[in-house]
Image (cartoon, rainbow, N blue to C red; front, side, top):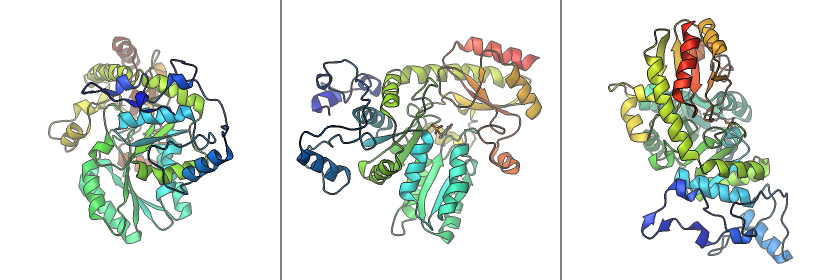
Length: 424
Ligand SMILES: Cc1ncc(COP(=O)(O)O)c(C=O)c1O
């Protein structure tokens, strides 16, 4: 493990920015033949110098004793720890302004492992809606099989809807977690994290529910949920952090104590990230700010174009939230930018949306988001198809809705592509 020399976060009195720290934080080249970049530690297990070392490493990893001052966890087995993941986790924690991070095999692995760690039979999870289709399935179809109820409130219902959902949940059992996806995929609905914190504190009935925020849509650059009062932030690293649509991974950040039960659950479920993916993510983190900034600028241009097009009925770009919209003050306080994933409705329904999607030549027709390339998809029939049609309509996932994830191409090329697809 790297010593303090490789974990310096100041130069003189100046605190180093996350984008600077991504080039080397937490990695000691002198432990790896002076290699500038961390090697990929493709190993399942690590050799102990002595049996006593092995005993002490396990004691710490399994929580059988407290950590001694300055003691670093010893490497044991790659399901428990691995150097690539440790460096990656240190760097992800910097972006999330967290004490610690855990890297997972997918965003869903991060979400499900976190919920397994906190939910108990008889408990309730209060969550915003819509949430990503996989999360929706977990909350409504899988967790109930284990005696965990989910109560949904619409993101656009504001704090009142959240509080009413908590009241209903209380009648069923203790609230294990407030689970928020904000902005929501695909509607960009916003939930006020500070209000969730106040609600969680007011619910104190022995144990305050943990607040988990899915930060995939804006994170980590444009939103920092822990600073707003969340306990844990989960992110599909598959999206903006990976950023090249070539890997699947997830992360969960928070205080070390809040992550402890999740770490234990990850070790037993085996939902950790693999070292090679961890290495790819570290490479991606070096360009994260550049990519997210460029994509956000391109998205603004594309959204401006779409908003003025006669074949477009509405554009759900966060930068267009009207001054008098209830989400506007929350957006301005909670978010540092509008990001680059948003939906727009064409005039008509599914047939008209499909016609536009099928005519695109530069923009690829694929689910996912946050990559360097622009992707378009149809949430109602793809990512959110598991949600019954009437519920889709209630959540705003209409047949005319197309979701765009704008990449880092020249925005004029994207506009030309949309122009020909919408014109015919
Ligand atoms: C908001 C959100 N959360 C979680 C996930 C799940 O992530 P993964 O596909 O990495 O499991 C996705 C995937 O699309 C998502 O959009």
